[in-house]
Amino acid sequence: MQAPAIVGHADKARGEVRMHVALPRPVEDVWQALTDRDHTAKWLGRIEVDAVASGGQFDLWHDDEVRSRHAVLQWRPPRLLTLTWDFPEERVSQVAFALAEAGSSAATLSVHHQGLDDAVSYAAGWHRHLHYLEAHLRGGDLPIDDFWTEYDELVQFYDRQQLGSLRRGRSFHP
Image (tube, rainbow, N blue to C red; front, side, top):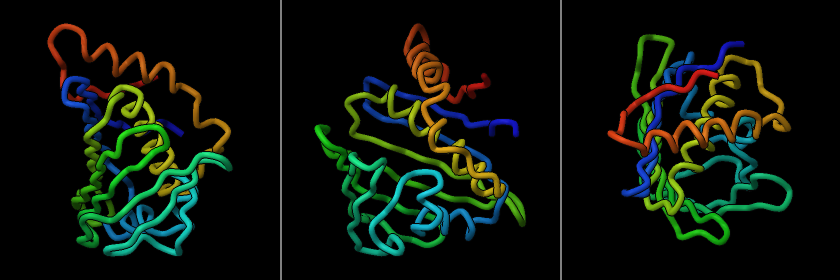
């Protein structure tokens, strides 16, 4: 399966990441993948509630030992979800997921994560997560053991964006 064209940018100075990806499912299906525990486990991590909900709080397990905590700040189904992102030993940041229709059976997802100390590594991480999300929506979940494959190359890719003039919205192709 070919990797999706994920367009992203890490801004170290502002401490933010912006990502955009076209997904092969309608907005409602992508919304479900963002908010339902059976879906999030396939691309992001295991949540300890049945589904993310308006005004809710939840824990997200990235593996058996690493947990982040989240509160829902904005809830506009099926278009906008904004969360706090409280990851161990990091300052609390904020991530927004915005969905737009891209045809009758496709959607565009934009991710904006701000308040980061290390935007480059977060850009690489979100890039991998979006790759897993796209595969999940196509019905071909990727093995979680392969998550870190190409991560170092993505860190280098997003770090190079910081050099010289910033080239916004470049896509990574291995």
